Amino acid sequence: MPRPSRYAPDNLPRPEHWARHAACRGAEEPDVFFPDGDVGLVLLLTEEAKAYCRRCPVRSNCLTTALNRREPLGIWGGLDTDERRALVRLARERAEAAEREEEQADARASAA
Image: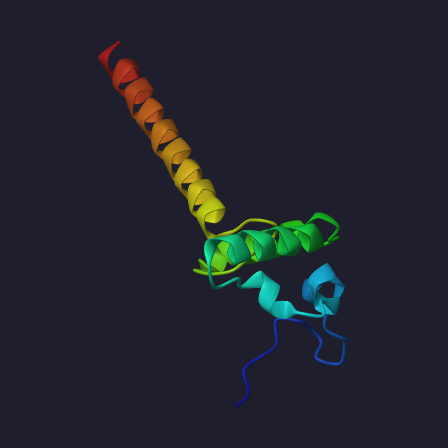
């Protein structure tokens, strides 16, 4: 038996994927989003890729997808690999700090 679709009923069209509206879709050289080579070339290609991202109507969708997939390489949503890692690290640190604060508040409440 086939698996049921999450879109019911099956005769409805599926929603259009956000990537169809991405500015990079029309890029003449898609390799700019995965720069490789010497440092100068990588910096130049990274800036070119980010220029596409700055004018992209689905930039946030792209970044969210890359973060969820933990994309290890490339420019996604206007951020390079190191920038995405820093964003994830910052979010993790904030979540840990909020958890510590909550635990301390619980401890103070139970001590009172």
